[in-house]
Length: 250
Image (tube, rainbow, N blue to C red):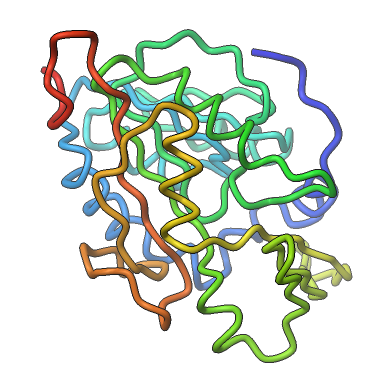
């Protein structure tokens, strides 16, 4: 893995620690993993890369189902928490999703809940994150990627500071530590339409098979709409020449 570079999210993760797992959006992990396992046709023994794994909630749930998971996150604190509670089959490493150097060979890559993808810096990072994930997949391997909906921000999020030119939402909020200490925070989140997601993934050699509207703890195959906060993209790295584009190699 490449050496992580500084990112604005690191001080927030350091402050929150395991208190991150108290937020309501983390409570639907089992349902989210149920859906991702089905959508990616995963089974015991498959190898999955969890990009922007945070404290490891999705990685842990996958590992409990016999799937081998390697989680990467830019936050040293989150990686330490993930390692501390890891079940067998789950490993973790501090790494920068913008410049991963993992070799291809993973059966699947997941990047959920704006983990790495969507956490913007001033110059924008999402293209490099997708490129890193695409490189990690074996031919025929599949990707599950969640992204915040630009439609939802414009229609529903009162008080959002949304830049229509860049598609980045700027939010001022407050996060709390494990002991309840408050810290003011600024968040920059990249927001997308389904068309933009298809173009971004295609530019990095991935074939999108579906884009669904979802929300935390309620993943499904519902068609894209303007009233759900997130999109879930399922995509695939094409097989080697002569192979079919659809399905998952076994």
